[in-house]
Image (tube, rainbow, N blue to C red; front, side, top):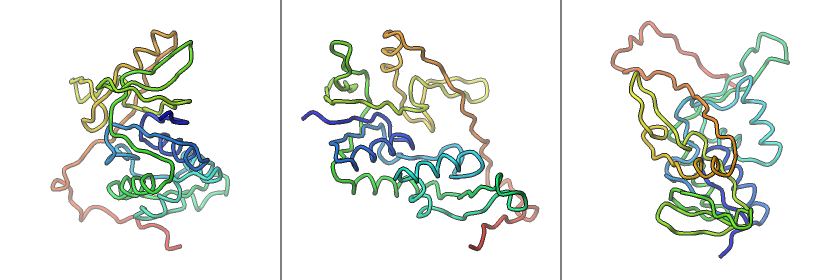
Length: 219
């Protein structure tokens, strides 16, 4: 079988890409390292806000899935900057970070024309300067008319904890090196982006009596 499109990476961008193709009746394959962690929220379990809210509304206007799944997986919603002018107001949803990936995985499984594969892509198959498919780390080759790379922070990634540096994806997930090395060999500029992760706090160390509840909006 030759797919119309292969999407490499099951994060937020990868999900929108594969759903868009499948909903256009294109035979689509999503390849990701861990299907139980599609659309994971390791850094910030919120969707919307002053900056991201614009992107979420654009995705929604184009028929995307993020806003719909955010509605289903929300803990609360709040209009930020409500006391200020309309230009700076923004709707933000706090998301159940365990429920949201399950919602997205259900949507993926229910989408016609979309196949899911839990695997790591080692390299692209290139013939006559055209991408023909992908090669997995076990040597299997899968062919496609197009390949969309949405690997995010899993491409040749490092984790820095204090002074320790290890090669890993977020939360100990495996990372892949082959694609970035291949792109560099093909003459593409490959740069590294830094993502900041908020500190984790032991819940037993918190004095909840000194904290105040910040409820969402009633409407």
